[in-house]
Amino acid sequence: MTTASKITLIRVVLIPVYMVLMLLGYTIPALIVFIVASLTDFVDGQIARRCNQVSDFGKFLDPLADKLLVIAAMVIFVQWGRMPSWALMVVLTREFAVTGLRLIAVGNGRVIAAGWSGKIKTASTMVGLCVMMAAPSIAPLAAAQELLDCIIVWIIVLTTLISGIEYFCKNWDVFGLKK
Image (cartoon, rainbow, N blue to C red):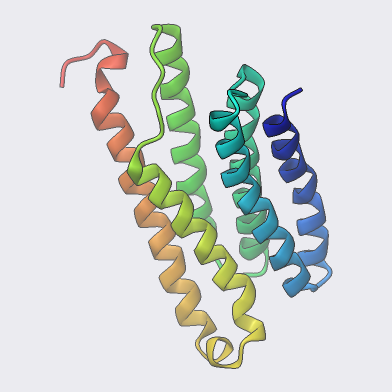
C-alpha cells in the first residue's frame, strides 16, 4: 500500500472520531479533527502525484473518503436542525450522478478528471462546514448563526449544482446522446 493511500485511510478512520466528538458536543476538538482530515486530502494527492503513487485503490478511496467526511458533517447538521435535509439531498444526488457519469465514461475507456468548479465546490463546502462548526463558539458568529448557516447552505447548494451541471455539460457525449 502506498503512503498516499495510507494517508487517505487516516482520513477514513478520522470520520467516526469526528462524528463521536460532534455528537458528544465537543465541537472544537471535532473541528480540529475535521480540518486535519480535510488537509489529508491535499497531502495524499500531492504525495500520489509527486512520488508516482497514483493507484487504482487511491483513485477509488480518495473521493469516497472526501464524500464520507462531508456527508458525516452534513448529516449531523441536518440532525441538529442547522441544515435542511433537502440541501443534503442535493449534495448526495450530485455525488451519485457524477459517480455514475464517471463509471459510464470509464466503461467507454475515458477518464473524467475533476474540474475547477468541483474543486471550488469542495473547498467552499469544507470551509463552510468548518465555519458552521466554529460559529457557536465564537461570540460574533454565534449571534448570527442562523443567518450564517443559511448563507453557507446556499453556497454549498449553488456550488454543488454548478459543478454538477458543468460535469454533465462537458461530458454529455458519454451517454451517446446528441446535445
